Length: 304
Ligand SMILES: Nc1nc2c(ncn2[C@@H]2O[C@H](COP(=O)(O)OP(=O)(O)O)[C@@H](O)[C@H]2O)c(=O)[nH]1
Ligand SMILES: [Mg+2]
Image: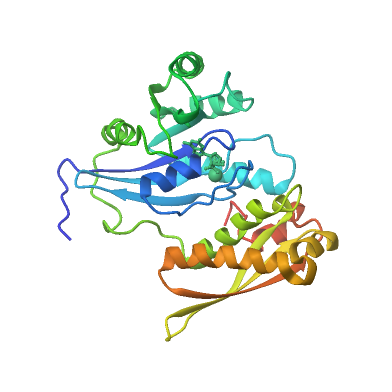
């Protein structure tokens, strides 16, 4: 690997903002691989998810984050802590909005307070430009500029179509500090496959189940074996809060969990390029979302 050092820029970039504005979709679009899970429901992302973009001139290390919210239970408090950690680690913040929103989001005052304290360069990103128009975006960008003086530019993009993303990268690159790359150019992330497998399964729960079930579910991979015959053998546990949720997840004659497993397996195979044999088990842990010990064992402890 020839590593240019003079003039090369490397830095951490936080994707922050309210829930459901397309932070994870944008990460995937920029990296060119589905690393972070996406659904139409808010609060799909619970961790910091890392994705790396390397060009001849720069390396941007993106951190997707849970959306800003007013926490209601311990899991949400921890999600906010993950989001805040990414903001404080970042060299540049991409603050994301829904381009079609008529006003600033409810959590804006909390976001503004955090950003003012951190004093970092901020690019405001109006995502879903495919659903908005110039007039609405102009109005929103005025609101944003007057609320956050640190905003250096407002950039409309569409994570769905890719429109505006090269302009976004052009605006971002000069804000990264001059530094040699921290990761080899081909690396897209540092998470283990085990993490991605858990997330892909969790995404299918968000897509296939309604009401409280997605919010009451955690996924834990207990065993991940790369077999010599080219098959990845994965055994995973889905944890829910109540017996009634377990019954729904499994479905009549196990049909629901079979569908879930099939969809998750396809996504994992797409990412690994290997065949996957996936076994799912459902376990009940009463009120795990409020329990420090359970949260820690499911990977939701921001202090570890
Ligand atoms: N029309 C449109 N929808 C988008 C775009 N980006 C994301 N979405 C949708 O918005 C929803 C939330 O996306 P997600 O990436 O999970 O948002 P996050 O919560 O901010 O990470 C999903 O249904 C996405 O398919 C976009 O550019 N255009
Ligand atoms: Mg997300």
